[in-house]
Image 1 (tube, rainbow, N blue to C red):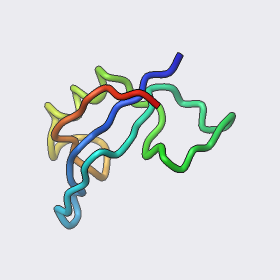
Image 2: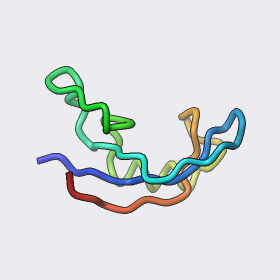
Image 3: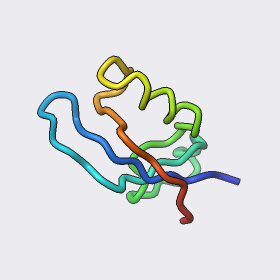
Image 4: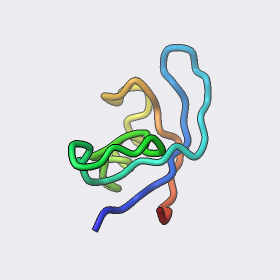
Length: 71
Protein backbone atom coordinates (compact mmCIF):
# COMPACT_ATOMS: atom_id res chain seq x y z
CA UNK A 1 0.00 0.00 0.00
CA UNK A 2 1.31 3.39 -0.96
CA UNK A 3 1.86 6.26 1.43
CA UNK A 4 1.03 9.81 0.47
CA UNK A 5 2.50 13.02 1.84
CA UNK A 6 1.80 16.71 1.42
CA UNK A 7 4.96 18.75 1.08
CA UNK A 8 5.63 22.45 1.38
CA UNK A 9 8.69 24.19 0.02
CA UNK A 10 10.00 26.39 -2.75
CA UNK A 11 11.63 26.21 -6.17
CA UNK A 12 15.39 26.77 -6.15
CA UNK A 13 15.49 28.87 -9.32
CA UNK A 14 13.07 31.66 -8.38
CA UNK A 15 12.35 30.95 -4.70
CA UNK A 16 8.59 30.79 -5.39
CA UNK A 17 6.85 28.85 -2.64
CA UNK A 18 4.45 25.94 -2.92
CA UNK A 19 2.18 24.37 -0.33
CA UNK A 20 0.37 21.05 -0.14
CA UNK A 21 1.92 19.31 -3.15
CA UNK A 22 1.07 15.59 -3.02
CA UNK A 23 3.88 13.04 -3.30
CA UNK A 24 3.68 9.25 -3.28
CA UNK A 25 6.28 6.84 -1.94
CA UNK A 26 5.87 4.20 -4.63
CA UNK A 27 7.12 4.71 -8.16
CA UNK A 28 4.17 3.18 -10.02
CA UNK A 29 3.66 6.00 -12.49
CA UNK A 30 3.71 3.45 -15.34
CA UNK A 31 0.63 1.65 -14.00
CA UNK A 32 -1.32 4.75 -13.07
CA UNK A 33 -0.76 8.38 -13.76
CA UNK A 34 -2.59 10.77 -11.46
CA UNK A 35 -2.37 14.49 -12.16
CA UNK A 36 -2.79 15.24 -8.45
CA UNK A 37 0.53 13.52 -7.67
CA UNK A 38 3.43 15.96 -7.91
CA UNK A 39 6.25 13.44 -7.40
CA UNK A 40 6.41 9.63 -7.35
CA UNK A 41 8.89 7.44 -5.50
CA UNK A 42 9.85 9.69 -2.59
CA UNK A 43 9.71 7.93 0.77
CA UNK A 44 9.29 9.53 4.17
CA UNK A 45 12.99 9.01 4.91
CA UNK A 46 13.83 10.68 1.57
CA UNK A 47 11.61 13.63 2.47
CA UNK A 48 13.35 13.99 5.83
CA UNK A 49 16.76 13.82 4.12
CA UNK A 50 15.66 16.44 1.57
CA UNK A 51 14.54 18.77 4.37
CA UNK A 52 17.90 18.34 6.07
CA UNK A 53 19.81 18.90 2.79
CA UNK A 54 17.90 22.09 1.98
CA UNK A 55 19.42 23.92 -0.99
CA UNK A 56 22.03 21.15 -1.36
CA UNK A 57 19.38 18.54 -2.21
CA UNK A 58 19.16 16.72 -5.53
CA UNK A 59 15.82 18.13 -6.69
CA UNK A 60 14.93 21.40 -8.40
CA UNK A 61 12.92 22.25 -5.30
CA UNK A 62 13.52 22.47 -1.56
CA UNK A 63 11.17 20.73 0.87
CA UNK A 64 10.62 22.70 4.07
CA UNK A 65 7.81 20.71 5.72
CA UNK A 66 5.65 17.62 5.18
CA UNK A 67 2.75 15.70 6.63
CA UNK A 68 1.22 12.30 5.89
CA UNK A 69 -2.13 12.43 4.13
CA UNK A 70 -4.83 10.10 2.81
CA UNK A 71 -5.78 9.87 -0.86
